[in-house]
Image 1 (tube, one colour):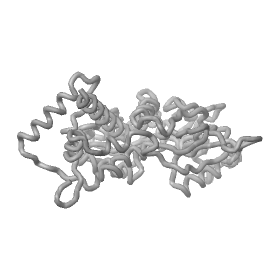
Image 2 (cartoon, rainbow, N blue to C red; image 1 turned 60 degrees about the vertical axis):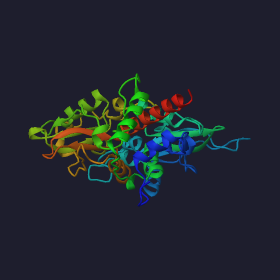
Image 3 (cartoon, rainbow, N blue to C red; image 1 turned 180 degrees about the vertical axis):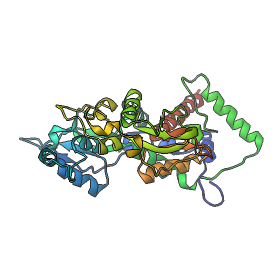
Image 4 (cartoon, helix red, strand yellow; image 1 turned 90 degrees about the vertical axis):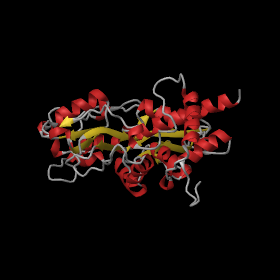
Amino acid sequence: MNENGQVRVIDLIDDMFSGKHNFFCSVRFVKDAMTENVRTLALDDTIGKCLEFMEQNKVRHVPVVDSPTGREKTPHLMGIVSDKDILRQLSPYLGKIGQTDSDARVIKQPLMKIITRNPITVSPQTPITDAITLMIEHHINILPAISDQAVVGIITSADILMLFIRSISLDRLSPLNPDEEKKNQRKDIIDLLSKNSAGKTFHVSSVLQIVEDVMTEQVACLDDQKSIAEALEVMRTGNFRHLPIVGKEKKLTGLISDRDILQHLQYNRKQFQPQADDFCTDLLDVAPNDPALKQNVRHIMSRKITYVHPNHDFCAAVKMLYEMKISCLPVVDEQKRLLGIFTTTDVMRGLLAVYALYEKFILTSKR
């Protein structure tokens, strides 16, 4: 901490090496980061009620439970319903001139018909790194925490972002310029701890500093002259939730998300029971005869895009994701040419790398 009371990343590294209490010690399990006192809905609640619930509580996921029967006192988790599950069912014509009777009936359907059953869960004692890994591997943003068959909390990707903001005071981080000798000594130790680690290793001396340290560089994009059908194919093939749209010289002109697809195109309604591992294959299964598929991507893409540059402060970018309730930031150069994308998943991978480095330090220090 400097003379102004500001927390610095370099201070955390020093705490790590001196054995002081720090972020990595205080946030180890799901219980350290999860949201408690979770509000739930019941299986027989309607889609319409769920929509109101989400709007009132500013949430995108709701645990759905059954009603206790007999000697049972605690409702059991039956599944999760997300805003995307609901968007799958709603017609883009709902409330408009093209609305049909079947469109209006959808919001009266019970949640039991659309929830994701058998969701992946954790316990409050699950290591936070295991929870983050589950989110990354299964492309999910929420994990219910279960204890004695009851929902005692939830942990979301937003909670993971909040780990930085709450525990490390990201909004107050400031740079430090130690003398070159101490800086090199610290880097040598970090390099030693990182040696022979599997996959790409992030050194604490560089990661968590700027966006470029963890952004995804090999990012798929689509020309703004292409059709919505072509955008769908790219997103399905790559299991992408976001697709940057570019114009001449690969300059960023827009962004398409899975929500844009669900909000503007007619979903291919069929007998469908979502499962925890379903992703773009079913999410983007729109009606094949929807005339909108032939339209240009500019008809549905978001044009007002928040973007960052590669040298943008990492901590500030994380705070942008959290406060704006978005999951990606395109990364561009000064001419607005697309260079990559910075996502919640990138942040979680970076956090996993730092935790792995800390665990190696603990093992080394005990020898």
